[in-house]
Image 1 (cartoon, helix red, strand yellow):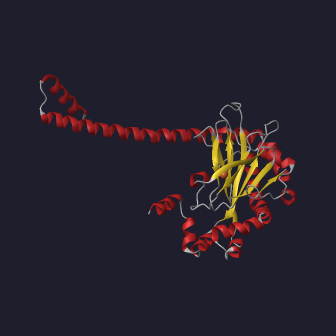
Image 2 (tube, helix red, strand yellow):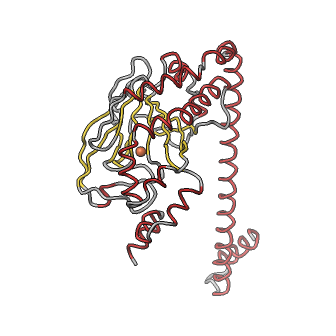
Length: 349
Ligand SMILES: [Fe+2]
């Protein structure tokens, strides 16, 4: 094709005025060439992406092997240090002590979420950089439980995940029993409280989060199926308490008409900052996604080396029981359990 194109260009250069057929053929040649170039560029992009992923995998393996060797004594001690019974009793106590606050929405701040020695292990188990997502340096995550991790990190985070499922879920459901009942009335309508209460509850969306200066999260509520959000601040000794979680009061608040993250300001509600939960070590902010909003901000001019680590997960129903309940709702309530795009489409019809 390129030879044909070159020949025709030579004819054009030496033949005086261009023949219409020659010009048409040249046009086709250029189009074909453009398609070929696009295909090569797309294929190259795939290769680059794969190479970057392989490089990252290799870095993770290299780091994990080194850590597994250096941390072998700490790993051996984990069997006795990760004391489940003691941690479970501790979580039960701190949840009982926490005061349920109702303004701007139902929430608790749990001090000393984990026993001190467990919290130290959790901080030490934060995996190094190659284990965090690398798309956006301001906002990096690791899914918990991890697919692959250094042994020490993997063991400690498995323990945290297990504690979340076995101890935090029942403690949360007990603490938020009353506001949850009201919430069920809002999202399902009256008459569904008992059924909603019996839905099996699970932990979802577990992620270890690293945030840096320039991070901004508009006031929002988490997805509708996430009834309660648990956010554990992984502050290190010496970390500033600034830039924790903003909590907002919402005037003329409405129920989200779809299941994804909901931004009240987009529905015309007034959003006003009500408070800031400080970023303190071993402290958990736990709140019901029933009203109001929460957000976060780390200014661009915050110290350049500032790092904010936290662990977030949701408590909410999973499995087919929730879908079965939604199917039994009256049509006008079912219509509020659709995706955002479906809700927008329904609005414009
Ligand atoms: Fe959120």
